[in-house]
Every structure is written in structure tokens, then in C-alpha cells.
Image (cartoon, rainbow, N blue to C red; front, side, top):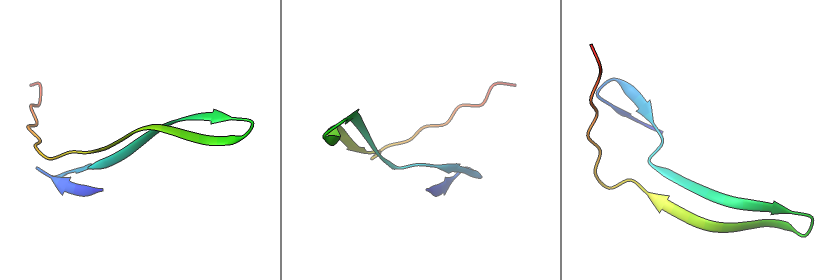
Length: 40
């Protein structure tokens, strides 16, 4: 997690299936560009 405009944001992540044989990742990503927009 890193601060971005005063908010802690995860910049890396992984999505995986949890199977009886173990974890099976199918997506690993890294945020390279971030634009935050806050509603009033």
C-alpha cells in the first residue's frame, strides 16, 4: 500500500482460485497510473 492523495491504495494485487489442491493464481497486476476523483 502506498499513499495517493492522502488515501492508502494497494498498487499490486493477485486474484486466485482456492482449490482443494491449493491456490491457483490467474491474475497478478500492478497499478501504473492512478487518477482519483472524489464526489462532493
